Length: 546
Image (cartoon, rainbow, N blue to C red; front, side, top):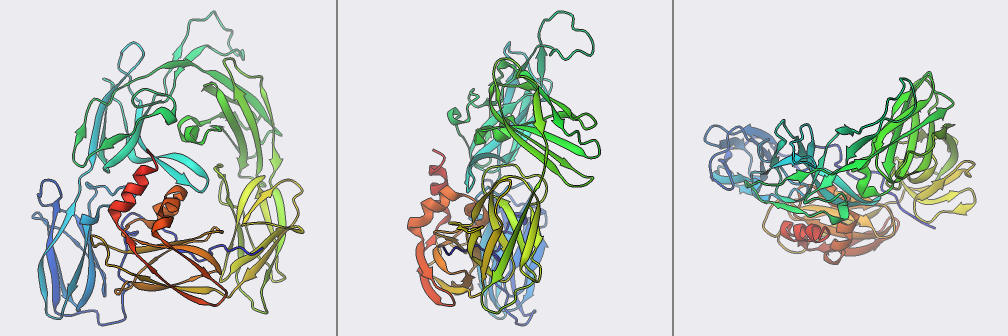
């Protein structure tokens, strides 16, 4: 069964927020001229000038300027053409979806033309103030408050910190500043433990000293992420009175021994809730003794967990993964048996007589599971064989780096639907067939860009994991090379397409506003798409979190 995997897709994961902004593709023309573009950067609410803001000019040439005390910037000796002017400042945050269109504008200048009134505005962030107290109303210091948003990745739902964190002081007061406007889940977490009255305990005993711990709390006062309320933060507005009264709960100690004891390498043990929404909230690391393999994790609240143990340094890594159920009393000491990473062999064949070098096979997690170190990968030898080392059992997504694409995949003699495989001990060798005949999709924007601003395109496979984002030329068209298959193709006014690509639920919501196209090997296909405005994209994203 044929499948397609994007090999040369442009990913923006490693770029900062401004590098993700779209740019007009530069043409090989003269680098100087007699035109100029100048203007000012102002605060979108107060209209006061923003000094020391960075202003980027992208077009036939790319330049950078910094505003003066009056917010003024200028670019001179420019060749005629179309440019994108974009501004940023550390005091004006960019939201997760990058929807602040006022911070960028398109400008066209002719030869000798002087544009002097280009206006770019920056939207200030919001602030949150509040107080954290214990069950008796006493202030709690050194607690953290995080502003979190829900995301729907290909691996499921997840709560991630997108607006920053702040710590409470000795009065229990905290302040979040410079948070991008939007809707957030606010969560407080306090590391303190409360000792309970107990009889004398002999030194060196394994008996636990009874303590209480504090459950992470979501505003307005729930430990359940699903019951939390989203708080809307407005630009430049201080939202005060977001208070938390923490609730103590009886925690237990989870202890055990990992064997064989990895005395010559580092031992890392984590206890993670099975509920993905709790994973970032309640995951805990263990105190370990590599010489004996003993470990303990204090103040663990009741629930279902997964314990993962890995070693690093000093040779071949070892791993273990076991389920752990925690109730009101400490479970029996765990025996964690470490196993060496699996060795997965395979072959890769390139269609026809073509040689595509170099090639590397890589495994990426296909479910919401922790990664320990870099993903397993191996170079394909001249005879088409490869061997992946230190592979942890689980579900993995196959990717091949090289000038080609995966046409089919099999585990032994069993053909695999899609590009994901379940790897277990004794798994059959992988067989990968590689194609080199890409298809072309010629994309044209069928209507003017709503509200102006940078135009970006994205596409993803309807039945595969192909994902690609791309820019448009000055006339609103472009050509994209993809493996054969069926694709959803979209155009949008969006500064951070990577965020959209990572959100499976948002992509699903966008399908009705995109075009679907099927392309075959070597064949071109034309498609016209209507651009999705930033405001419409925001409404789609917000509706997913209602």
